[in-house]
Image (cartoon, rainbow, N blue to C red; front, side, top):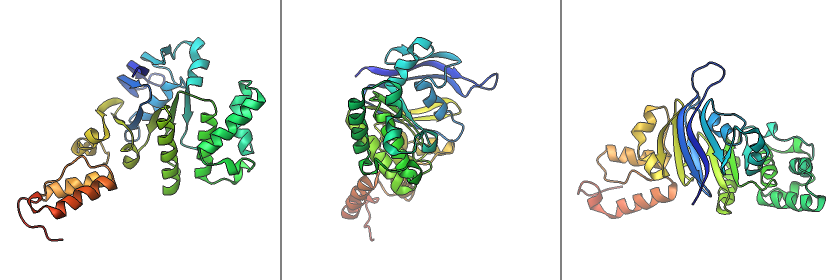
Length: 287
């Protein structure tokens, strides 16, 4: 794998305020799926906005596929390579009809009409919204609007998509739909950077980067990151519910693995626990 995004000793501040990012060095490989966690004010959205040059470093360098984001001549190419989906889809939806909104950026780029129609249909199919092609965008639910916002980015054919808390305003079903779409896009080879404050969402990534006060606190696989529950809770973060249950069992003297992230893994551990008396300090277990 080759690096597609590089932060080299990046610091960022607004005007003369304190640093929001502090000497961040981070490399993201092509095709990776990286979740970025952090409490409010940790710098995670600021980091995201550096990837497609919405923000530029105060110090250091950010490069996207080898292109320096601080070079104005690279701006158009970077934004074609790195699309961005924001927290509030209303901030991205421009047109009043679904297909027109998805086509908006393509029209600005001068994409031929036949190609544009094909891309719009493909993108709407990818997010499960093709039947809403002729619908008014104002009549859509929050989850449907977020799907349309994602479709508009997909239509641009980016190599990278940055999701900046895309499920923060959605109900549980809407959140699940968006996460599933994100995973499918990554399976198709798109590099995904996924900013979230939902632990269960982050647990589905390939890699988790945790920010605290503008610095990288911990970086690794979800299993590695979430087994450090004490460190995470010390900076105001939680762990997935399944992981939390494992720590609770450990605190009661029950020998279980800590790096359990989801319901399936949790059920497997509990099933083994019920079937193995020796798992509980050598004593019988009675449910």
